[in-house]
Image (cartoon, rainbow, N blue to C red; front, side, top):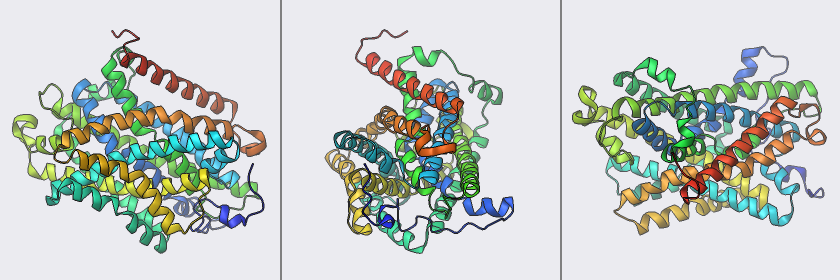
Length: 450
């Protein structure tokens, strides 16, 4: 059970920014929305991090547009889950990690914390390696140096937090815009077959019967629907100052936070679609090995692979977008690490030390692996697709508590899930678990593939 004898302020999620942004009373729609816009960008950036890049582009280069349907379904699932996570934080004043720890046994709480920490490590693998490779491509830094520079961005976060949460939101939104425009430009140049693109959004039964397609599909799900983002969303939805005793205030907060979240996740959906479309338009049917960021960078300037549009400028834009994606994702990943550590193990220490510790926990395994395989970038990047599949496996451990808590009448009151949302969320959770078990059985050779 929760400890009630402590200062309530000390139990707030991300206490230094919790309720720090004033909301105008009786303002118009657009002015109110302007105040609530921001957290959605921090959430959305996790859905277009470097882990998405390899899985989405690989999906396009191997299976053309077929897996666009997986991106669409993943994005719709993300919208539903993030709206639920935000509503949980707004109504209860606690994040998902805090509520999970309060409502589970100590042993189960520790188990869930370990699974969630591993999920953040899996996320950091893509973000840190992606940023490190981008720095190497742009400036010629050795990969290890690039990774260490990226790992040190926690210091940047400490400075930004002092400047105010709105500054962080603005910076991340700007980086998202860079990613969007770079890939929109590159896809326009690639001239994809538009009718085929739209056909790709229709689900195909091939996805379930082809082992490699299923594996990559789960990688896309893992890269799109991020477990740590559910914890992050339930926390940063509380940065706006809301009167929880006033139902009108709560309804307004839920409404505008959901609009912000869905709008930004739509942008993430567009970016992920553009990545897969780019992979299909430029690389489907070629013999190029595109399993690495360096391969993609080189291919974009190779006329033998991508034809007349090949240009060093395309490669440079790709590297800039990769750096923007990695840096914005590591900022939100560090915040998520703090939320999870505070919520699950109730760590009491100075905030700067806490952020540094959570960053080191998630970064250290990546650094060790990178140092061990120094000079073998292909081996390092092999981690990426596996890390995204692991995220898909870890997702139900965050989804099950989220659906349970947001459906709890005693906890949420009139703001609990409607019966339709409740059963839809449970169905999605069950299907994801079944697909993961199916994938494991296929990998072990216990289930025949078509």
